[in-house]
Amino acid sequence: MFARLLLIPFVLFTLAGLYLSWEVSSDFSWFIIIGVMVVAAIHVFSPQINWWWYTRHPKDLDPAMKAFLERFDLYYQQLGPIAKTKFRHRISLFQLGNEFMPQGWESVPEDIQVLIASAAVKVRLHEEDLLYANCEKIVVYPMPFPTPLHPHEWHSSEWFAEDGVVLFAAETLMKGVMKPARQLDLAVYEYCRIQNALKGSQPSSPTTDPWPEIKARTGWDEEAVQKMVGIQAVDGQAVLEAIRFQPLFQTHVVA
Image (cartoon, rainbow, N blue to C red; front, side, top):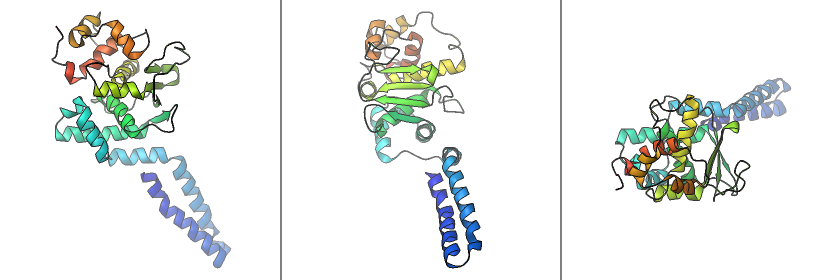
């Protein structure tokens, strides 16, 4: 990260102050004071420093994550070369600007982070600010989970608006990417819900009853989607918006 690199000269400056104060004169102790103050400031403001730097000097994904998108993300596959680069840069920035919190394992795998970030970027692709002001914490479980709001339903995604946190089960997220005809992309679904809340309203022309179109495009009825999410309370409008981001369902209509 850029902030860590920025620390190096000031750490050396502080060490030089220590040496000069010990070997030459205590008059050089101001080196130490200034160095420590600047190092502390960089440490405290490192998120803002990194964000400032990488918005101006975008960081690309590593080759393994590029290959992951090329292989599994149908939306990414249909973009042109320039659009793909911009898309990857925004994924990287999204990862930087959000907190990924593992629950039930030590860390959130990189491919799961990219999968979630890709979904979030799609929903706000044409927005100048790619971050969601109402949700910057992402909790990821390896498997479906219960929560205080749904203690008896082991589900795979949930948005807890009061705390600005969205929760996902990694296993189901991967199924949505690898078997898109059988599983709703829950990351896109939840970020459609989050985006609608952020805008303060539903889309300009919401479908009165979205389920007939969902059924025609995918073959899924409301009960099927409820099983995919793992809870009974499903936002049909967000489901319809989510499948519109899936190239598999843009022209395909189930008889």
